[in-house]
Length: 223
Image (cartoon, rainbow, N blue to C red; front, side, top):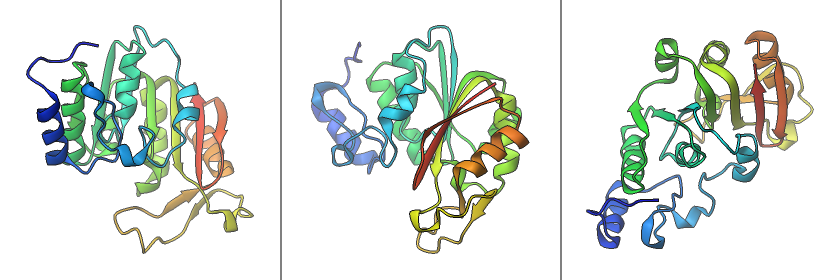
């Protein structure tokens, strides 16, 4: 992978410090990573299992990364040959981080600041939609699910916060609890049955393949 010549180890390290802290741990040239303390590229999620849900060959495909953060999934999609990758997040800080990583890696990825429903309402379809670590922040998960169904041409990989283990007996619908200790987040927790109802019965996805289940849950949705 070609590296832009104006970057060296010192300038990359300095920029990481300026833009940090990073939530995503991105591998950059000279053996530098953006957040080595987090280990895997996307902190808090089962990175390996999520990647198995993405096609190994994305040649000619378009990919939308909702809530892209610093771009770990966008970068992976581009490495797998995607013709076009678009990522957006609500935070200018995250988008600045993502643009920097893409620039250093010389990857053409389109990044912008946007709110989820605003972007999806005006978006063209994408072959693959990546929707990781976002659903539980949203005030209207039902409306967003319907928008994702319209935008995802063939596949959506979804991951979110699940119902905590001591509440696993709750199985019906969408489960909501207040989360006063995480004030920046929303309050939507959902279990696997809730996801199935929301994205199959309400939004209209035909395929629903669980990837993992627990305090974090993920599914592969297909049209």
